[in-house]
Amino acid sequence: MSKYIYELEMKVRDYECDLQGIVNNANYQHYLEHTRHEFLLTTGVSFAALHQQGIDVVVSKVTMSFKTPLRSGDEFVSKLYLQRDGIRFVFYQDIFRKNDNKLCLRGVVDAVCLENGVLTRGEMFDEIFANYL
Image 1: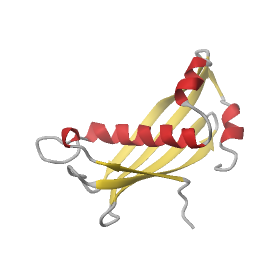
Image 2: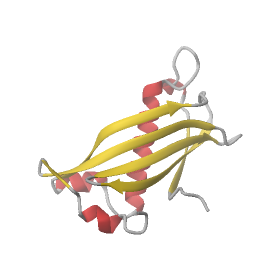
Image 3: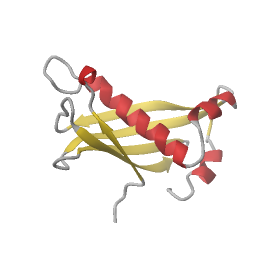
Image 4: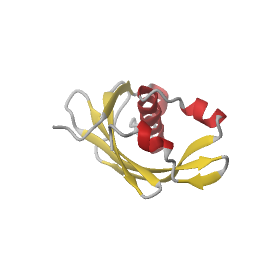
């Protein structure tokens, strides 16, 4: 059984590549963030709506290990699973190229919850993520 709880398919756009013809490293963070936001929507929660309520989930740490480069036009699958570690939610995110299922990136993203600017444990997410933790 797969450890992943969510998958999102995407495609590399020309402007995301550098002079070497590979995806610029900074764009991988966009892929990871977009995947987390889309995952949150599947739980019925909007990142923007949370912000309007004074609840902000912010990244506190990102670790990315680059394995195989993506190139313009490559289709890929961004996968994730998560764990709670104290006040942090830790998102384990991997990106695989679709045509050969090669691992392109392994990422770990730590996120914390601020409520009206105050660091909290984000207890509301225990219920939202109950099926995934």
